[in-house]
Image (tube, rainbow, N blue to C red; front, side, top):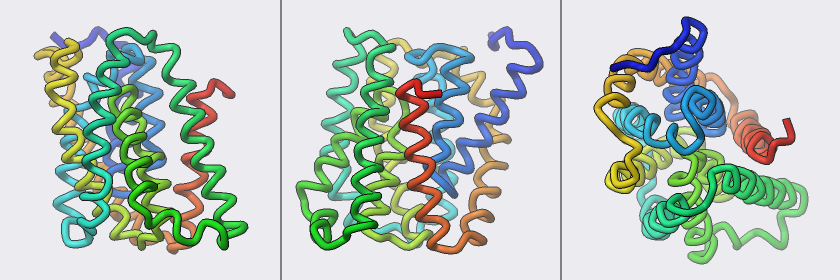
Length: 249
């Protein structure tokens, strides 16, 4: 049985599904769009399971479009701590009220974004930090926790890949593989929490064409945006996402 949505709510769901595609093949920072919309249509906690299969479909599409551009060294650095972070996020979801962890995630993303701004302004002290194992582990762990709690790791990984100065295509290709693997790992955790069902899967299937449209729109967008603008947009979307999660607007 599909959700009993109004026409306006179905249109919002379609826009959010298209946003998933764009975020997977273009600008990961706009992932806030589907996080917010699906949290309103369902609940913050329930939407994580509803959205997960759609994210995986978007990841598969992005991998097919950008598979030649992935830099596996960055995937392998961040994936192990991200898996640990998923476990921590799953544990937190079992007892922490959902109203608590969204501001926490927003605060983390805001701090990371401000550090990236400081690095752009005064690069000297931060020259070697993004390339250390400690930085990769810290960002991977944070991405794992935030993706399990709220599917909100797009800005976190975006800031990591921005910090290590990846070109646009490599940025998207590396992100695509990272999220495909981590989202597949999340499936049994979400299923155990009862967040995925035949009802949510039927809803996912109905929105697949919107995800596909967003994937091709995102690829076209990336090809047209200059590298400097791309970097600035990733940072700007991360800051907007953090303020929204903090409840600033």
